[in-house]
Length: 254
Image (cartoon, rainbow, N blue to C red; front, top):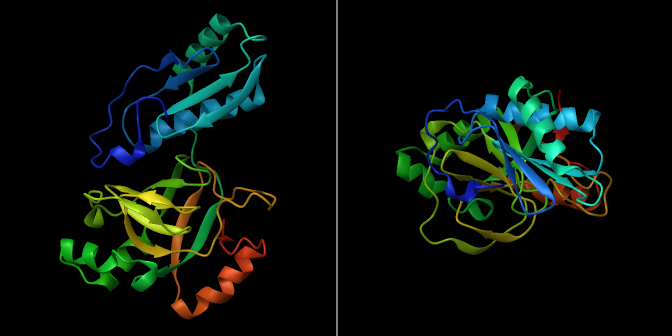
């Protein structure tokens, strides 16, 4: 995402209303920027413009990538009038209205704490809360999927209860397991594959948000809603086996 990296944004300032900007990203992409904060209205404009481009695809359009506050538009430079595309994007961005988060609503099972969430107690102690209280606050929130990025299937979520917002670790871990449910600053994350991370691990889900051999390969999409469902560790093995066999495990409830 041009000019913004979710791993580096721990504190979200008051949203500012900015005029949309169209910026060049090399010779085969343009970025349409709507703001500089994590905000549902800004993200709603990103999703609205993304929908317009899906319905009215300009010549040479290859792919769009929605992020927190900008839309990356990739095109074939040999078959695209770049100047005309930039004018079109600027005009649409000026008049687009935020699109409501009309995606699916998911309930995702999570085993919290212990070997599944090794930072749960530390996060609780930092905020003067018990582990149970942290779990309750984390699981009761309704999250919005703002973007998929960093690695395939990594779902970045907004909506974390500010009571448990926690700056990232000073020393990132070189490996965290797939399915990690973690927090960093005011953001939450559903991880997909093993990866390094400086976020705090609260739990783990057996759900495979990214599975190349499954159709669809990706489950969560920008604009979807998420709630977490705490489950006992005894259910992990069966759900993990079902997910490995290609079942979604996560449930669509709306």
